[in-house]
Image 1 (cartoon, helix red, strand yellow):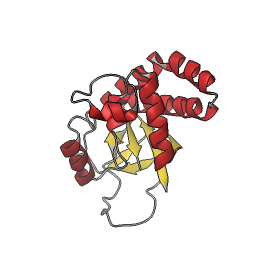
Image 2 (cartoon, rainbow, N blue to C red):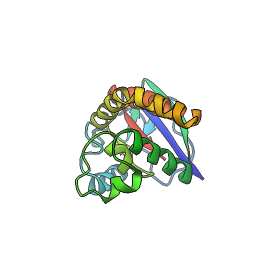
Image 3 (cartoon, rainbow, N blue to C red):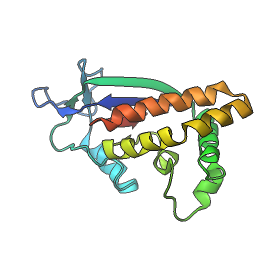
Image 4 (spheres, helix red, strand yellow):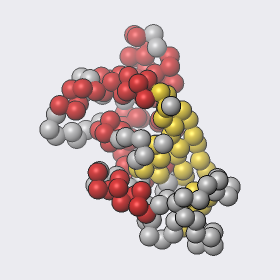
Length: 173
């Protein structure tokens, strides 16, 4: 098992799409994504503000202009990548990030995110700015550690955040 990331651009309520129940199987129609209000409420309880910008009460079904999906890696591999991200952004390590009582700063939303989280456009915009600001450091660290895979993953996350910042969202699943 591993972690997949899907970014959606320009979400709009699709009231003309029949409502589906959460237990119904099968993919949604092309260009449609379903957000269950119960999922978003769980995210908001655990992480207030994480879905800011999404309006799940408008409709369960949403149309999107574009999407991008990539594999973040195995859970262990993703945790290693997060440690690398924490290191380049000044947190020291992933473990040191979690030991701090106040976790505000670069990439904090991504470092705190867990599978099942949906991040709204406001959070995606902030993360896109973080990715832009630290790209040089990420590339330098990548060369120093001779690990092309981490920087390639960095660029995929950057692309996903930029896309989601445009009226969309990021879905970690």
